[in-house]
Amino acid sequence: MRRLFAAVAAVMVVSAGARADAFKTGNVLYQECAAPIGAREYANCQNYVMGVADVMAGNNTVNGYAACFPRDVTVGQIREVVTRYLANLPQSRNKGAAGLVADALAQAFPCRR
Image 1 (cartoon, rainbow, N blue to C red):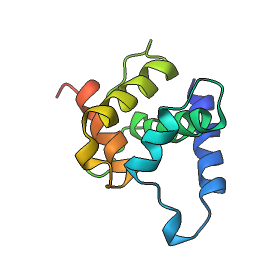
Image 2 (cartoon, rainbow, N blue to C red):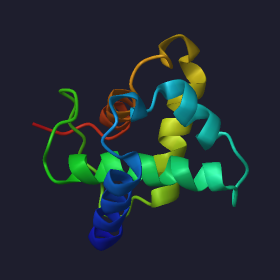
Image 3 (tube, rainbow, N blue to C red):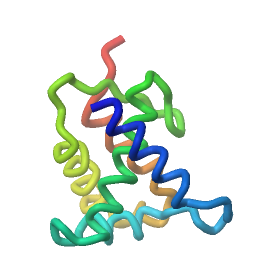
């Protein structure tokens, strides 16, 4: 699973490019996440979400958010958490997607300290 996360993160870095306007908003991510399974947009959503999750799984924070994933969590569960979060907060979708994903994952998978 960690190798899959690393591969997804690498694809995201390559596909994002170096342009400042390439940063994804929650609006764009939600459109992708709401696409039918098998659609290219659906895959984009899953890859983006898993890239952020991979960073967080390495005991790193994203925009100040931390998440602690159970060993048996699936890619589908993580994507669904983010999709529901975005669906329930349309007023926040204009913000950067990485921070929104991190907030969703931190709420769903809080770290016990």
